[in-house]
Each structure stands twice: as C-alpha cells, then as structure tokens.
Amino acid sequence: MPELPEVEVTRLSFAQRIANARIVRVRLGKPLRWPIGITPEALQGQHVLGVRRRGKYLLLDLDQGLLLLHLGMSGSLNFAPTQPEPGPHDHLDLVTNQGVLRLHDPRRFGAVVWAPSEDSPQAHKLLGHLGVEPLGAGFEPAAFHAALRQRRAPIKQVLLAGEIVVGVGNIYASEALFMARIRPTLRAHRLSRPRADRLHAAIVEVLARAVRQGGSTLRDFVSAEGKTGYFQLQAAVYGRAGQPCRACGTPIRSIVQGQRSTFYCPTCQKH
Ligand SMILES: [Zn+2]
Image (cartoon, rainbow, N blue to C red; front, side, top):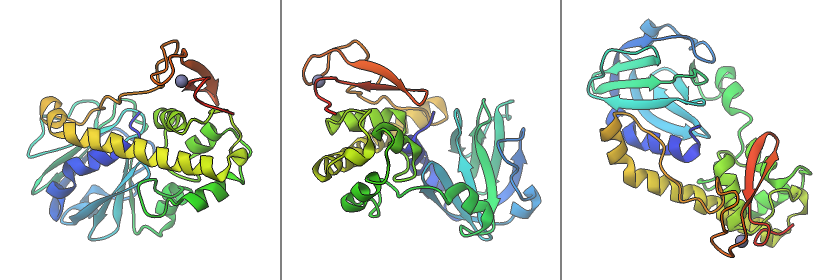
C-alpha cells in the first residue's frame, strides 16, 4: 500500500512537469471508490496550476476547483509525454498539452474526486479529519504530547489512526517506535514528555529518510518501469520477526494490533 513517503515521491515525480499544463481531454476507466463529481468535458481547457499533498491525497489545483487523487491499496501515477493504449486497470488519463497523467489501480480502492474548493463539503469529507502533516511546521512536540495525553489506546494504533498526525502507516509506525525505544503496546496517554519528544523526532526522521531514499531512486524507477513503484526501506524491525535486533541481537517479535502486524524488539523498546 502506498504510504505518505511514496505519495510524496510520486508528487515530486511529476509536479514540476505538469505545472501550468492545459487539460486537453479526460478519459475515465472503471468506477473508483467514489464518483469523480464532474464531467470530463468540464475539465477540458482548464489548467493544472500545481500539485500539493495532504496526507495521502494529491491535490491538483485547477482553474476551477481541484482534483483529489488517492492511490488506495494498489494505485500508481505516471506522467509521460505519451502513454500506451489504456489497459483494464488504467482508470484515469488526464491528457494535457505537456503529457498524460495516468492512474493505474488494479484493486480500485483509489479515488479521483473533483471539489469546487478545499473548503467545500466534497473536499472536507476526505480531508477534514486528517491530523497535522508530519513533515510540516504544524507538527510540533508540545502539541503532539498534549494530544497523546488524550488517548488511552496503544501508541501504535493512535499513530495509525492518523487523527493526531497523518501518514504514519504500519511500516513507519513500527520503525519510529523502535527508533524512539517505545513499546508499541504502551498506552498513548502514558508517554512522558521526553519520550513523546523522542517519538516526534523519530517520526520526522523515518518519513524524511524514506522520501529522500525514494527521491534519490526516483529517476531509476520512473524510467525503468514507466511507473512509480515502492522503494526498499532498510527496516530495523518491520518484517524481521525472529531475526536479531540490529541494536542488541534479541530476536524481533511480531504481534497483531488492530488486525495489523507490529514488529518490535522486546529488549530495546520499553513499556
Ligand atoms: Zn534490541
């Protein structure tokens, strides 16, 4: 599943090239998670003013309103001068005078929704509940700690819920908790300020590193496959059950929390 770093790297892969492009034609494939909410004809002639990201949504600002794109479980976006004939899993072609943006999504949990503005009900339904951006100035240690104090759920699940801070998905939550030496099952409200500060720094570090790694390999994976893919995270704990902790050698443990696998080191990560 594309997580925040993959979505940010996807944004970086085409944001500059599509800027100020004029939409010539829009081809829609099979229905996605929600209806697009506008006719393809109404998009023709509009310009893509820029591409922003909010959580795991990409926001394409247009002359009138914006398109919100979500990659769902299996989506990928590719922007190229031309595209081959669309296949059965290609559900959007945004044909512009600067290239064609194509959404490929075999499982169709992705979404393309037009909204008249970011403050409209359509946009608010998708973006309104999102917590602060982990890589933005709004993610601040004191406020993070204060928000954690209000939650009694295990810290890992509080991070995954995305209501305090967005984009800390399953892999990155496990990795950040290891880096901060915090047991994933610890109840969020019990984190002291110093431990919350460590976790805050770890979240920023883990996500920023993933974006950097993705950015540095971007050219390779765009040109090789013709579409953006996932990049390899050098995981400390994620997916390493039974293997020795890189810090202390204790076998990494795997548990299930809220139907998601969690990995941690029972020696390094304290309750
Ligand atoms: Zn360890």
